[in-house]
Image 1 (tube, helix red, strand yellow):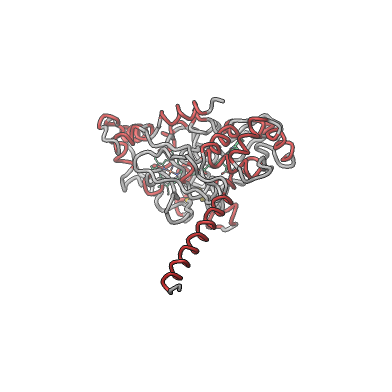
Image 2 (cartoon, rainbow, N blue to C red):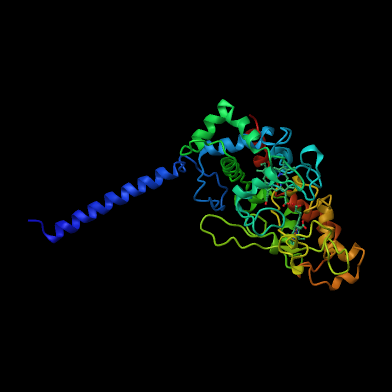
Length: 385
Ligand code: HEC
Ligand code: HEC
């Protein structure tokens, strides 16, 4: 005779078997499980957030790395991601404004990819762009202006990789559940996986602040750090946290919570207008209150990424400090100065301040101490084929 207890136990076993089978199916459906990938994280850094449909695997990162450096990914075969995001310059291009295929001038400056995995939003001013997978389509397909010029030539571009034995093998291994893995979607997924590995946290400042290396930061840079974190200058209020940046997301964090600021760079009309098309969040929302609002980028490796701001209009770090000291350069030097002091678009934290020449030097020294040479060296080495 079978008692209720035995029945219950049998039911449990059945449930467990069913769950296990279901789980196996799930894992197999996912195919590309996060197998063998280990984050190399600096002390105190959280693990980046990874979309559930694009788990990290070493082979996917390797595929993304190759694609990132390969000019065959552009329509006419002349430009790679790395052309505008050069590791030696912390993944920027040294230009005020980026240059797409056939010398198409982009209205904005190429951004650093330092710690890009943590950014709550991507791009200078787009509140809706939150996934690296989606961002990668922008340079590929953009037509205003063309950056990599893939729009309308998708099949031709993909055929180059499908026809390459080594790439075919990498795509197959990185996306094992796909019958035809060489797709634009998988290109962007692999690029995103690679970009998430671009993590930098070994600057002299880090070694001094977190590594206990008292000598890593010289006294001038230490004085600069005190200024940076002071209520007088307020830099840390917008360039915040471990990434010296606007809002971050990571594994287990809330968000994303986008945040953008007007730092008073322009005032075209006495009411705070920025020159089109670079009107910031306003160009996405159409709201007057969003005029001139941009994301506060990371200041890590900032000494390598001149010229500065969304349009590269400030050539040096010292000149950036002058802009902040003036409470936004539009207030002191714009065509409508000093009337512009009353505009309510410029962020209230842009109150302006006076710096002695020594203080200015100290602050620049501090910003230089955010340069992570090991990151740059490694990024250059992994750029080798
Ligand atoms: C023609 C130069 C150019 C090329 C080529 C290029 N980019 Fe960019 N990249 C830019 C510019 C300019 C921006 C800023 C765009 C904006 O916000 O308007 C940017 C921004 C980004 C960002 C956002 C970074 C952040 O902190 O939010 C990522 C990520 C990125 N690019 C990845 C890529 C990838 C991947 C490729 C190759 C598929 C690529 N880029 C090719 C110029 C370029
Ligand atoms: C109100 C918020 C806010 C404050 C305060 C602030 N920043 Fe910024 N910072 C931003 C934003 C937003 C940008 C991008 C602006 C743009 O491109 O239009 C930026 C850009 C920069 C850049 C150029 C980054 C790049 O990649 O081109 C540097 C350098 C910089 N800030 C340093 C500082 C320093 C130093 C201080 C303190 C003196 C400071 N910031 C205070 C919000 C702020």
